[in-house]
Image 1 (cartoon, rainbow, N blue to C red):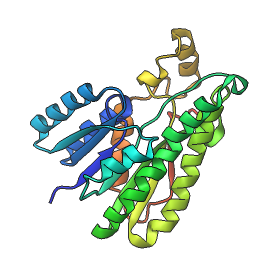
Image 2 (tube, helix red, strand yellow):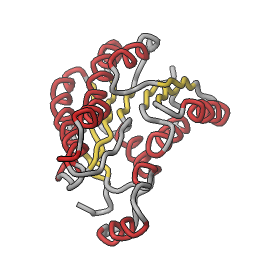
Image 3 (tube, rainbow, N blue to C red):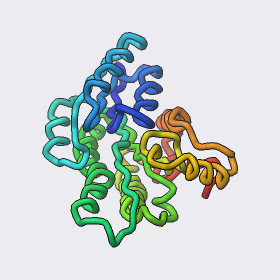
Image 4 (cartoon, one colour):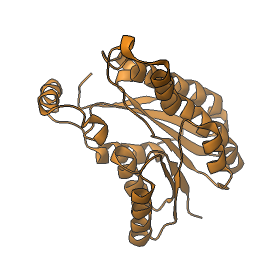
Length: 239
C-alpha cells in the first residue's frame, strides 16, 4: 500500500519542492495552499502523470480551524504530515497591529496544532507516522524586525520537542527543520543589496535552495525511529 503525505503550503518554494520530492519517492499526496489553488492543481496533475501517484489539492487556510477540520474529514489514511505553510512579516514590533500578530501566530503555530490533533489518530491507527514541522533559525535565536515570526517559530520548536515526547511511545516521530535563508518568494521582498549582505554572512556563500530542504525532509522521514524531538538546522553555517 502506498504511503500518503500531507504537505501544507505546497504551491511554491519549499512546499512545492517537497511535493516534487515526495512524489518522486512514490508517496500519494494531499497538498494545500491558500491563494494559488489553480497553480497547485497544475502541479498535482503534473506529479500524477510523472510519477503515477495520486494527488489531491485543496485551498485551505492553515490558521483556520474549521478549514483544517473540513480537510481532514476527507482523509482516511495518513503516514506523513509536513507543516510547511507560513507567512512573513517584517517591521518594528511597535508598528504591528494585533490582527497582524494573530495572523502570523495562527498560520505558523495554531496551524501545527490544528493539523497534528487530527493527524495523530490516523497515525495511531497505523501504529506509526511522521510529523515534520518546517521552522526557522529565527525560532532558535530571534531576528530583529521579525519578532512575531521568530516567536511563532520558537513556539513551533517547543511544540515539536514536547509532542515528540508525547508520541514516542506510539512510534510516531516528530521533528523540525530550522531553515536558514532559503531562496524562495518569501525572501523576494529583500532588495538585491540586502540579499548580498546576507550572502556574505553565510559561510556557504549562498542562499539555500528549496530542493535542499526537500531532500532533508525525505531523509528525516526515512531516519531511524530513535530520531525524534530534534530541531535540525539547515543554514549553510549561518547561525
